[in-house]
Length: 75
Image (cartoon, rainbow, N blue to C red; front, side, top):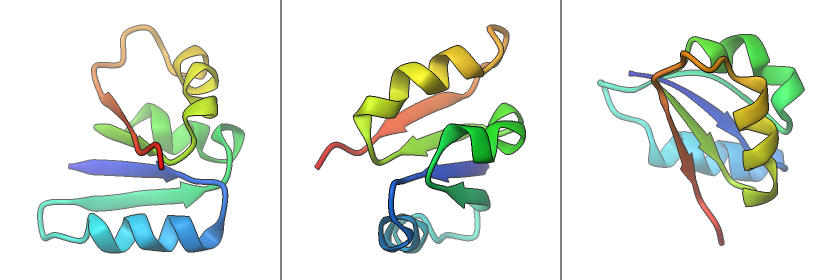
């Protein structure tokens, strides 16, 4: 499974990468904003977001036909 992580800080990105580390998960990239990860997010199976304020931006940026999931961690 291809996963892209979008989290506001490098520490949050690293923490989510650690939580998601399994043989079945490939972390395709991590960034603080959608614009930095747009190409990878378009090919990801799952987009993991640590800031729920970015969800609307992600939904608008991804193609309508994308069948992947968006997972939001709201802490």
